Length: 380
Image (tube, helix red, strand yellow):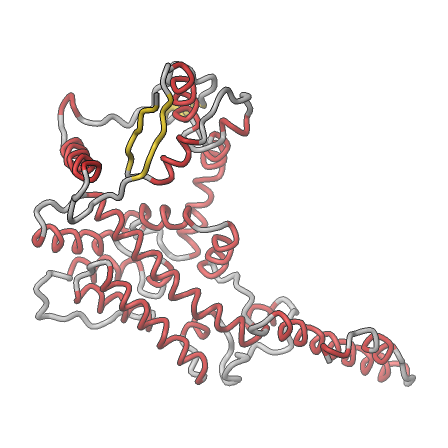
């Protein structure tokens, strides 16, 4: 006999169906997200006399044609009621130990189960990280104005490689020519695309070379369309596009049907140059939510959270589109082209070294010809 559990969270469905039998207890298993809940579900799943299987049902469907979709809508309504509950029925955030949990981390601010290693690291270095971010981005006075929730949720959804790229771009660690020249890794600080100005990160985002301009125009059009697809208020979308494009304070439409003054004041304090990197004020989400609720009385908090995260995703896509275009132009679009450029750079570097050696002792060296002969002809 098999019983089916329907859930609108596809990741939860997959993880539940993977729970089979006993699992060896280890520190690695404790460090998984929701490890205590998974362990509890595994225990109960084993004890039941029937087999349990989870299936996914799409959430927030406009037309509920099946029994499962109608039940899901009822569950969504009950969840929305619980979000607004007060008094003794309010959801408590204090973490309690489940019956079959074997380990739990106790810190001054409460108990932590799952991601124990991450929790310890945050407690050890969290304040230092906050201080560094505040000083680097000049957010000491504007810290509480930033929408850290949407920024954090989107950052966690990225791969480790993309997280590293994002941090390099945010903190100006990206290997632009201007930075590489400072550390002796580049002979020139000029932009490799336009060859006119120093290639700082701000210049990369606004380079006037034909190829960079075309790539930016395409990325901006995709960003504008994406904002429209997720139901963004037209005036909010316009402000976001202007801010992401220029990195400066845009002109606010005084005839807008929304009061956008709160957005402008809060973002003025945070700074407009870091909007494209996800450092937006909470007022953006508040203004969007107020407008959405005026159109749909059943607008749920989940939709607000989803919209804020999607805005972060689309802004990041805009930034990476420009940065990836720059890298392809500099390092090659295909693997073979990239390999050829590496070979040419190595040859030029070796030739420069030979000239310096020749001028210093007045003799000729054959290192250049010997080294280049080792490269395959297909790359020359």
